Image (cartoon, rainbow, N blue to C red; front, top):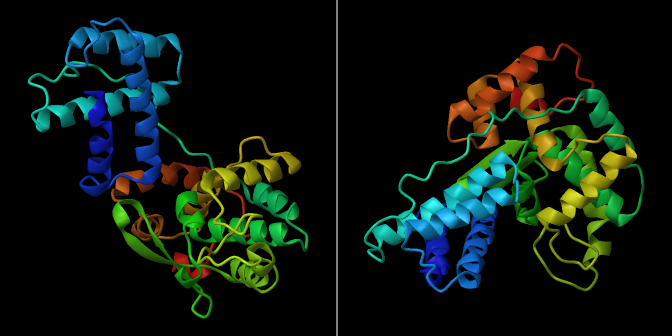
Length: 295
Protein backbone atom coordinates (compact mmCIF):
# COMPACT_ATOMS: atom_id res chain seq x y z
CA UNK A 1 0.00 0.00 0.00
CA UNK A 2 2.89 2.34 0.65
CA UNK A 3 3.49 2.62 -3.08
CA UNK A 4 0.36 4.79 -3.23
CA UNK A 5 1.87 7.55 -1.06
CA UNK A 6 2.84 9.73 -4.09
CA UNK A 7 -0.72 9.52 -5.45
CA UNK A 8 -2.11 10.51 -2.07
CA UNK A 9 0.19 13.53 -1.82
CA UNK A 10 -0.80 14.58 -5.34
CA UNK A 11 -4.44 14.31 -4.22
CA UNK A 12 -3.78 16.60 -1.25
CA UNK A 13 -2.25 19.19 -3.55
CA UNK A 14 -4.69 19.09 -6.46
CA UNK A 15 -8.01 18.24 -4.80
CA UNK A 16 -7.77 19.32 -1.18
CA UNK A 17 -5.54 22.35 -1.72
CA UNK A 18 -3.07 21.58 1.05
CA UNK A 19 -0.08 23.92 1.38
CA UNK A 20 3.35 22.72 0.30
CA UNK A 21 4.51 22.89 3.92
CA UNK A 22 1.74 20.53 5.06
CA UNK A 23 2.34 18.20 2.13
CA UNK A 24 6.04 18.09 2.98
CA UNK A 25 5.23 17.24 6.62
CA UNK A 26 2.79 14.50 5.55
CA UNK A 27 5.39 13.10 3.16
CA UNK A 28 7.90 12.79 5.98
CA UNK A 29 5.31 11.19 8.27
CA UNK A 30 4.22 8.63 5.66
CA UNK A 31 7.81 7.86 4.71
CA UNK A 32 8.32 7.06 8.39
CA UNK A 33 5.34 4.71 8.17
CA UNK A 34 6.76 3.12 5.00
CA UNK A 35 10.16 2.59 6.64
CA UNK A 36 8.48 0.98 9.64
CA UNK A 37 6.51 -1.46 7.50
CA UNK A 38 9.48 -2.32 5.29
CA UNK A 39 11.84 -2.92 8.21
CA UNK A 40 9.36 -4.97 10.23
CA UNK A 41 8.39 -8.63 10.18
CA UNK A 42 7.11 -10.13 6.94
CA UNK A 43 3.57 -10.27 8.34
CA UNK A 44 3.38 -6.46 8.57
CA UNK A 45 0.61 -5.40 6.22
CA UNK A 46 -0.84 -1.90 6.19
CA UNK A 47 -4.28 -3.38 5.57
CA UNK A 48 -4.18 -4.90 9.04
CA UNK A 49 -5.12 -2.92 12.14
CA UNK A 50 -2.39 -4.73 14.08
CA UNK A 51 0.28 -3.20 11.82
CA UNK A 52 -1.08 0.28 12.39
CA UNK A 53 -1.32 -0.36 16.11
CA UNK A 54 2.33 -1.43 16.18
CA UNK A 55 3.29 1.75 14.34
CA UNK A 56 1.43 3.87 16.89
CA UNK A 57 3.39 2.15 19.68
CA UNK A 58 6.58 2.95 17.78
CA UNK A 59 5.59 6.62 17.47
CA UNK A 60 4.84 6.89 21.18
CA UNK A 61 8.25 5.47 22.01
CA UNK A 62 9.85 8.56 20.45
CA UNK A 63 8.06 10.84 22.94
CA UNK A 64 7.08 13.34 20.28
CA UNK A 65 5.39 16.57 21.30
CA UNK A 66 1.59 16.15 21.34
CA UNK A 67 1.19 18.46 18.34
CA UNK A 68 3.74 16.46 16.32
CA UNK A 69 2.13 13.18 17.31
CA UNK A 70 -1.31 14.52 16.37
CA UNK A 71 -0.06 15.53 12.92
CA UNK A 72 1.53 12.13 12.31
CA UNK A 73 -1.67 10.35 13.32
CA UNK A 74 -3.68 12.69 11.09
CA UNK A 75 -1.39 11.93 8.13
CA UNK A 76 -1.76 8.17 8.61
CA UNK A 77 -5.53 8.34 9.08
CA UNK A 78 -5.95 10.56 6.03
CA UNK A 79 -3.81 8.22 3.92
CA UNK A 80 -5.77 5.14 5.00
CA UNK A 81 -9.04 6.95 4.30
CA UNK A 82 -7.74 7.79 0.82
CA UNK A 83 -6.88 4.14 0.18
CA UNK A 84 -10.39 3.13 1.20
CA UNK A 85 -11.99 5.80 -0.99
CA UNK A 86 -9.96 4.64 -3.96
CA UNK A 87 -11.06 1.05 -3.43
CA UNK A 88 -7.50 -0.09 -2.72
CA UNK A 89 -8.46 -1.57 0.64
CA UNK A 90 -11.78 -2.95 1.85
CA UNK A 91 -11.54 -1.90 5.48
CA UNK A 92 -9.94 1.28 6.80
CA UNK A 93 -7.39 0.12 9.42
CA UNK A 94 -7.29 3.62 10.92
CA UNK A 95 -10.94 3.57 11.98
CA UNK A 96 -11.05 3.96 15.73
CA UNK A 97 -7.51 5.32 16.04
CA UNK A 98 -7.64 8.27 18.41
CA UNK A 99 -5.57 11.38 17.95
CA UNK A 100 -3.71 12.66 21.02
CA UNK A 101 -5.18 15.66 22.76
CA UNK A 102 -3.30 18.86 22.05
CA UNK A 103 -3.44 21.90 24.30
CA UNK A 104 -5.18 24.83 22.67
CA UNK A 105 -2.57 26.79 20.79
CA UNK A 106 -1.94 30.31 21.97
CA UNK A 107 0.27 32.40 19.69
CA UNK A 108 3.06 34.56 21.04
CA UNK A 109 3.20 38.21 20.06
CA UNK A 110 6.42 40.19 20.28
CA UNK A 111 6.32 43.47 22.18
CA UNK A 112 7.12 46.78 20.54
CA UNK A 113 10.37 46.81 22.48
CA UNK A 114 11.34 43.41 21.07
CA UNK A 115 10.49 44.52 17.54
CA UNK A 116 12.69 47.55 18.03
CA UNK A 117 15.56 45.46 19.40
CA UNK A 118 15.29 43.10 16.45
CA UNK A 119 15.37 45.93 13.91
CA UNK A 120 18.36 47.45 15.70
CA UNK A 121 20.37 44.39 14.60
CA UNK A 122 19.55 45.14 10.97
CA UNK A 123 21.57 48.32 10.65
CA UNK A 124 24.07 47.79 7.85
CA UNK A 125 24.76 48.34 4.17
CA UNK A 126 25.69 44.86 2.98
CA UNK A 127 23.32 43.29 0.42
CA UNK A 128 22.36 40.54 2.88
CA UNK A 129 21.52 42.98 5.67
CA UNK A 130 19.50 45.17 3.28
CA UNK A 131 17.58 42.06 2.23
CA UNK A 132 17.01 40.93 5.79
CA UNK A 133 15.80 44.37 6.86
CA UNK A 134 13.36 44.49 3.95
CA UNK A 135 12.05 41.00 4.75
CA UNK A 136 11.54 41.70 8.46
CA UNK A 137 9.89 45.06 7.79
CA UNK A 138 7.59 43.60 5.15
CA UNK A 139 6.73 40.59 7.29
CA UNK A 140 5.75 42.75 10.25
CA UNK A 141 3.94 45.29 8.04
CA UNK A 142 1.78 42.73 6.22
CA UNK A 143 1.50 39.65 8.45
CA UNK A 144 2.12 37.30 5.53
CA UNK A 145 3.20 33.75 6.21
CA UNK A 146 6.93 33.19 5.80
CA UNK A 147 6.19 30.75 2.95
CA UNK A 148 4.27 33.54 1.22
CA UNK A 149 7.08 36.01 1.86
CA UNK A 150 9.80 33.89 0.24
CA UNK A 151 7.47 33.07 -2.68
CA UNK A 152 7.11 36.73 -3.66
CA UNK A 153 8.32 37.77 -7.11
CA UNK A 154 9.25 41.28 -8.20
CA UNK A 155 5.90 41.87 -9.86
CA UNK A 156 4.02 40.91 -6.68
CA UNK A 157 5.00 44.22 -5.07
CA UNK A 158 3.48 47.52 -6.21
CA UNK A 159 5.91 50.12 -4.92
CA UNK A 160 3.76 53.01 -6.08
CA UNK A 161 0.58 51.87 -4.33
CA UNK A 162 2.48 50.20 -1.47
CA UNK A 163 0.61 46.93 -1.88
CA UNK A 164 1.92 43.36 -1.88
CA UNK A 165 0.03 40.56 -3.62
CA UNK A 166 0.50 37.02 -2.36
CA UNK A 167 -1.02 33.61 -2.92
CA UNK A 168 -2.09 31.96 0.30
CA UNK A 169 -3.41 28.54 1.19
CA UNK A 170 -5.40 26.76 -1.52
CA UNK A 171 -4.09 29.36 -3.98
CA UNK A 172 -6.26 32.11 -2.53
CA UNK A 173 -4.78 35.46 -3.56
CA UNK A 174 -4.98 38.61 -1.46
CA UNK A 175 -3.58 42.13 -1.59
CA UNK A 176 -2.13 43.70 1.56
CA UNK A 177 -1.04 47.31 2.05
CA UNK A 178 2.17 48.13 3.85
CA UNK A 179 3.56 51.27 5.49
CA UNK A 180 6.36 53.72 4.93
CA UNK A 181 8.99 51.92 6.99
CA UNK A 182 8.63 48.77 4.90
CA UNK A 183 8.55 50.90 1.74
CA UNK A 184 11.90 52.51 2.59
CA UNK A 185 13.55 49.20 3.49
CA UNK A 186 12.22 47.47 0.39
CA UNK A 187 13.24 50.35 -1.88
CA UNK A 188 16.77 50.39 -0.45
CA UNK A 189 17.11 46.64 -0.94
CA UNK A 190 15.91 46.83 -4.54
CA UNK A 191 18.18 49.76 -5.32
CA UNK A 192 21.35 48.62 -3.59
CA UNK A 193 21.10 45.00 -2.48
CA UNK A 194 19.25 42.68 -4.81
CA UNK A 195 21.43 43.27 -7.89
CA UNK A 196 24.55 42.36 -5.90
CA UNK A 197 22.96 39.11 -4.74
CA UNK A 198 21.63 38.35 -8.22
CA UNK A 199 24.99 38.66 -9.95
CA UNK A 200 24.75 37.27 -13.46
CA UNK A 201 21.65 35.26 -12.64
CA UNK A 202 18.10 35.76 -13.84
CA UNK A 203 15.17 35.05 -11.55
CA UNK A 204 11.88 36.83 -10.79
CA UNK A 205 12.26 36.05 -7.08
CA UNK A 206 12.17 39.11 -4.85
CA UNK A 207 14.37 37.86 -2.03
CA UNK A 208 17.60 36.09 -2.98
CA UNK A 209 20.26 34.08 -1.19
CA UNK A 210 23.99 34.54 -1.67
CA UNK A 211 23.87 32.25 -4.72
CA UNK A 212 21.41 34.52 -6.50
CA UNK A 213 18.56 32.06 -6.02
CA UNK A 214 15.25 32.36 -4.18
CA UNK A 215 15.77 32.38 -0.43
CA UNK A 216 14.05 29.41 1.20
CA UNK A 217 11.70 29.38 4.16
CA UNK A 218 14.22 27.40 6.18
CA UNK A 219 17.00 29.80 5.23
CA UNK A 220 15.07 32.84 6.42
CA UNK A 221 14.09 31.05 9.63
CA UNK A 222 17.77 30.53 10.45
CA UNK A 223 18.54 34.16 9.58
CA UNK A 224 15.78 35.38 11.89
CA UNK A 225 16.91 33.17 14.76
CA UNK A 226 20.41 34.60 14.42
CA UNK A 227 19.20 38.19 14.68
CA UNK A 228 16.90 37.26 17.57
CA UNK A 229 19.85 35.81 19.50
CA UNK A 230 21.83 38.99 18.87
CA UNK A 231 18.89 40.99 20.25
CA UNK A 232 18.66 38.77 23.32
CA UNK A 233 15.23 37.42 22.39
CA UNK A 234 14.88 33.67 22.87
CA UNK A 235 11.47 32.99 21.32
CA UNK A 236 11.25 35.07 18.16
CA UNK A 237 10.59 33.48 14.78
CA UNK A 238 9.19 34.68 11.44
CA UNK A 239 5.76 33.46 12.54
CA UNK A 240 6.01 35.55 15.71
CA UNK A 241 6.01 38.65 13.50
CA UNK A 242 2.80 37.46 11.84
CA UNK A 243 1.25 37.06 15.29
CA UNK A 244 2.53 40.50 16.24
CA UNK A 245 1.01 42.07 13.14
CA UNK A 246 -2.43 40.70 14.03
CA UNK A 247 -2.20 41.46 17.73
CA UNK A 248 -0.97 45.01 17.27
CA UNK A 249 -3.64 45.80 14.68
CA UNK A 250 -6.42 44.54 16.95
CA UNK A 251 -5.02 46.36 19.97
CA UNK A 252 -5.18 49.57 17.95
CA UNK A 253 -8.84 49.09 17.01
CA UNK A 254 -8.75 47.29 13.67
CA UNK A 255 -11.96 45.29 12.97
CA UNK A 256 -11.61 41.54 13.45
CA UNK A 257 -12.98 40.83 9.97
CA UNK A 258 -10.42 43.13 8.38
CA UNK A 259 -7.58 41.38 10.18
CA UNK A 260 -9.01 38.02 9.12
CA UNK A 261 -8.89 39.08 5.47
CA UNK A 262 -5.36 40.44 5.76
CA UNK A 263 -4.12 37.22 7.36
CA UNK A 264 -5.89 35.04 4.81
CA UNK A 265 -7.76 33.04 7.44
CA UNK A 266 -10.66 30.99 6.12
CA UNK A 267 -12.35 30.90 9.53
CA UNK A 268 -12.88 33.87 11.84
CA UNK A 269 -12.13 31.52 14.74
CA UNK A 270 -8.49 31.39 13.64
CA UNK A 271 -8.29 35.17 13.98
CA UNK A 272 -10.13 35.35 17.29
CA UNK A 273 -7.19 33.76 19.12
CA UNK A 274 -5.46 37.14 18.84
CA UNK A 275 -8.20 39.10 20.58
CA UNK A 276 -7.15 38.01 24.07
CA UNK A 277 -3.54 38.94 23.35
CA UNK A 278 -4.68 42.31 22.06
CA UNK A 279 -6.87 42.91 25.11
CA UNK A 280 -4.00 42.11 27.45
CA UNK A 281 -1.64 44.46 25.68
CA UNK A 282 -1.85 47.83 27.37
CA UNK A 283 1.38 49.31 26.11
CA UNK A 284 1.63 51.93 23.39
CA UNK A 285 3.02 50.55 20.13
CA UNK A 286 6.06 52.52 19.05
CA UNK A 287 5.87 51.02 15.59
CA UNK A 288 2.64 50.21 13.79
CA UNK A 289 1.79 47.85 10.91
CA UNK A 290 0.61 49.61 7.77
CA UNK A 291 -1.80 52.36 8.80
CA UNK A 292 -4.02 51.75 5.80
CA UNK A 293 -4.40 48.10 6.86
CA UNK A 294 -6.13 49.16 10.06
CA UNK A 295 -8.58 51.46 8.36
